[in-house]
Image 1 (cartoon, rainbow, N blue to C red):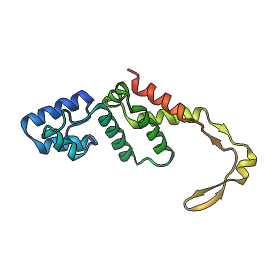
Image 2: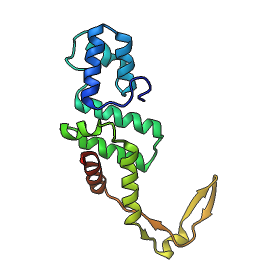
Image 3: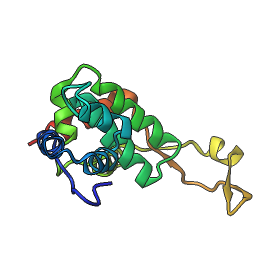
Amino acid sequence: MFEKFGKMDYEELIRTAAAEREEGDLEALVTLAVENGLEKEDAEDYMDYIVDSLATPYMAAVAKIEGEAKELGIKGHQVDQKDTILALLDGNDELCLAVRKKEKSLTECLAKILTFSSECAIQVPDAIVKLAEFRMNGKKEAMRSPVYEGGETKADVRRIAKEYYLEA
């Protein structure tokens, strides 16, 4: 992401798209769209005046988060956290615009969630640990005490994401 045009907040994205359309440069407009996680068709529709803007704040925010998630290669629990953040965006233009800020990233947001999770981690009772297994290099191993488990809820993820993206 952001190879040619660099990171942009929403207003910069829209201004740059307008300038490229004004110049009639579809190739640059497509590059801008794809670089920002949007579809080639979004750029074509904008160039053809089918839509008034390259993207809505919601589209731009979702595209940024999805693109960052793909670059990070997140899996499992982190995908659930990302999806919880995406659900917050629907109908919340203030949050969508905040997500698009240059200095904000999914990486930092997920790091804040992980920090919170580790801070509220609790020790798993030994009776559970003795019966549990984990895989190490494809081989099942018995767990050994102590084992600590984090415990952020979806409500925690929503709260942390809002605080992170909306802080100045």
